[in-house]
Every structure is written in C-alpha cells, then in structure tokens.
Length: 241
Image (cartoon, rainbow, N blue to C red):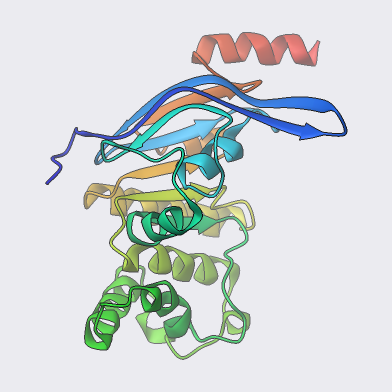
C-alpha cells in the first residue's frame, strides 16, 4: 500500500521522436520527472513544447522512443497493447479538453462504461461507484440526461466523475478548462482542488498560468525539455523578440 509522498510516477531520460517524410521531430528530449502519490502537478509551457505528448506517454496512450517510465514502481514503457489497456483501465483516470462523452449514452451510462470492461466487477459495485462519483462532482441529479442536454461545465463534471469511478492511482487532465468559459473553468479547477484535498494525485496540462497556479507544483516545458521557471521566461522572451 502506497503512502502519501511515495513516488507514483518516475520518468528517466525520456525521448519521443516523430518521423514524417524523412523529417525527425523531437517532441521530448531527455525528460526527467517524478510525481509523488497525493501530489498535484501542472505541466505548462508554450504550444508545441511537448506537454500533451508527455501526458499521453504517462497515460499509456503513446510509447516513448527511448527512456524509462515506472508506474507504481513497475516499468511500463514496453508493455504490449493488452497490458497497457488493462493498466489504463485500472490505474489511470483521464479528463480531456473535449470531454469525450458518448452522445447516445446517458450520464450514468457514460460514467459506468469504463467499469464494464472490468469483468470481475459485480453490477452492484459498478452502480455504487457510479453514484458515488456523480455525487462527488454534484451531477447525481442529472444521471438520466444525455450530454447534449448539459452545459459544457456540466459535461466536464461528468467526465471527471467517469475518471473517478475507477478509483485510479492518478488523474490525468489535458487542458480540462480549454473548452469552457472562465466561470465554468474556475468551477472545474475548484473541483480538482477539492479532489486533491481528498487525496487524489493529479497531473494536469494547461497553457493558462492562472490555472497552473492551482497546482502544488509547476513543471515547465520548452522544446521538449523540462526547464526552470526563470529559464522558461527567458526563452519565451527571446522567442517574442
């Protein structure tokens, strides 16, 4: 059983290269990163700096070109497709900018869907987890509604509930406020802050410095590398000259 402060994610010298028409694009270049259990980390930096690529690798949606990645102390960078899918389903909760809710499923069914892939989970346990998650985000009263009947802020709350229902080791949020107005954006950030207070481990990508400040710690990326905040400011100033 992990204790708060134990290392949940350990990334060592991670690189990611995309090859297109004989052109090499180095999205990540020697990234080192550790995220402790119970920590709230924001990854920020300019567009194209590698934030979302790094989050995709952390979420096992993509594989690194080189380097090591340990999740809960186990190497996961070279697992096969089936094992990666199993770990994603059981260990990782995703919150996307575009919500990614299924339009012809109700709120309840959207939150329940990832749990249906856990073959040994009884339906009573699924129901309990779905209702707990919806209550936690203040959306239990909308369980029979469809995504089209909800505001953007409400849809993102349902997406958070879907991520929570699986009791993941970590919540990964990729620009969770990107499709929301400022009021709903602040409401979602407040929700994430409350989840963190309750013990959730969160890793969030954001381009908005206002929302990055909600996290305990900020990791700054520039051209595929982790840089110190002062160095990022200097590099950004040079780019804008």
